[in-house]
Length: 406
Ligand code: GDP
Ligand code: MN
View 1 (cartoon, protein in one colour):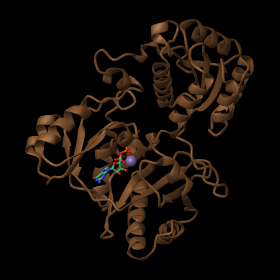
View 2 (tube, helix red, strand yellow; view 1 turned 180 degrees about the vertical axis):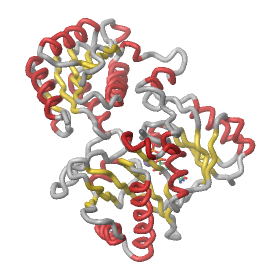
View 3 (cartoon, helix red, strand yellow; view 1 turned 45 degrees about the vertical axis):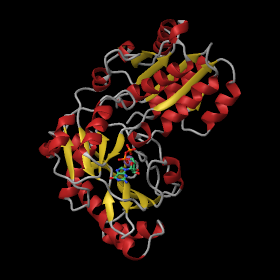
View 4 (cartoon, protein in one colour; view 1 turned 180 degrees about the horizontal axis):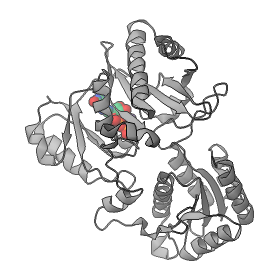
């Protein structure tokens, strides 16, 4: 179960991690009775990351601007998700942004500390600088310190960041969390640190032991938020998402009703169990604007990947209007989206392998159309698997499902 930022910050505050003074905003008029001083940051409270990049984080220095910003953000879907509440918080002057996380490595069943001296919205840079320390014995501050040294920090900052990591770790342990992430942990010119963003995922299996945490679940049903939250008149509703087999582990995404059904049939014939099939459209000319198709592709991937039951997503796109390289660009963009940087850290000895989303489904991509080679090349840099032949793509999908079975 994921928490919203303001909920994560509540946990941070209780754990002694510095957070800005903040207030939850349920409607724009709440800003009239704001108790924190201006300037403030106003932030969309959605489960998606990348809000900064998409206009979901705005600064305001007076009430009029703040109310206007709140109106804008309330009506701005972030990857199809509209916020039900906003967060207003004291603006912090940023000199440096760090990335920090504590994450459970399932394969070795040990927590891992992650840190990058280059945090913030540029996820690729953060990943390039990522350092890790496996907590292989009982935790001691030594582990936190080792990470901070690896990150290249020194002096007072070393101590301040070590303290934050220790507190993140205790929180992680006490609440049985899967992930505690701070990005950015901002540093001002005075060397003070502040958690400006927080992501917390609780372990679903342990929620019974933490009723207060379980009560924070604001999400009703997978994907439902996406549907409900689209503004009236929005171009596309993912109501084409049909459940095929409730025990299924495969998500099928294709363009056009015929292709979607055919792909689903072939998967079933091969012995696979599709949970959901999603048609991103594109049969009619008006439906096939490249930007729209790419956006629907991204949204469709998001929708399918939110369902933890789906182990593999098979993308089958036969593209007349859209070069294959555009399709793979959209897929690559989706894979880079900073919902949260960390998800699975594979082995203590390997390089940190950072893939998106906890247990994020594998992606098998089959394309027909022009610029196939460019498409293949651009996917080669991502975890997605490119397969030219549909039968092979289906075989690959099934074998990945088997591999990922517990
Ligand atoms: P995300 O894009 O969804 O990860 O949202 P964040 O909460 O991380 O905000 C994105 C970016 O907005 C951060 O990396 C900061 O650079 C900036 N930001 C967020 N809060 C503040 C703040 O209080 N003060 C300032 N100056 N910048 C902020
Ligand atoms: Mn962030």
